[in-house]
Image (cartoon, rainbow, N blue to C red):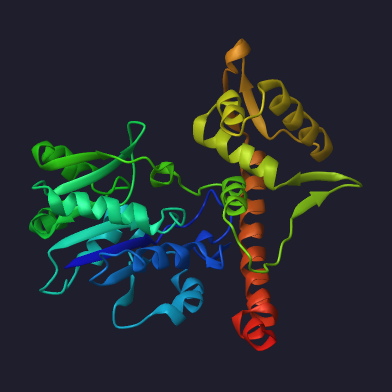
Length: 320
């Protein structure tokens, strides 16, 4: 039997919203990921959803899918990294469990057929670990033998999941090329969420809205927010611009315009010519960004609550 762990304990800091419950397809990101697992031909075990940050806000949105085969566990140590969520999910496994499939909550684009392909390959091979690969980049889901569970429990918690286990057992790892880019796609930023959501064929009716600050005209919103997040991540305005398919000059002009309208500097720049040099957030820029992210997170949660109240499944079931 295969027990599946869906890791959903993250804080969604770069998203600025609880991405687990953002609308996706005809439900949410997390529920779509779980439903795709359920639809696999080889689904024969338990699915464990591991919550952590703001679990009390996420749980009401998934309680309707919980049954004897779908459980919700809470990882109180989620801030110590992904491995702590894996360890939480491995506690008290059913005696019939032989293998563990591990995937992330923000993988709603991985289709049941892709899960089937990876599971079938793993079961047909003698290796104890399978890691799917797309274009030489490792992705999810990862499947491991139950034999390795005691070693996982001995690993030091870190943000890197099973990376150290895989390094210890190179002879037991099967890297399996998969022709599905979705296995490596994460939904970390709000612009990524909007892009991937728009690609999904979706006939459901969802509330759509945008948030921004203005001063006679729009000053700051989701787009600039995602640029600042990437500058903070990469330490480079040039790399941040490349990440969102924007030219360096466009990004530079956008930041300059926002700084002019706000009346303070958002980033500090170090000369580097066409390479963009180095860039980092100023203290005021970081405080401004953190406040916008916190506001957006609370606003999205409240809007989602109101959408469910007035235009939730019960409303549409009654209408149709």
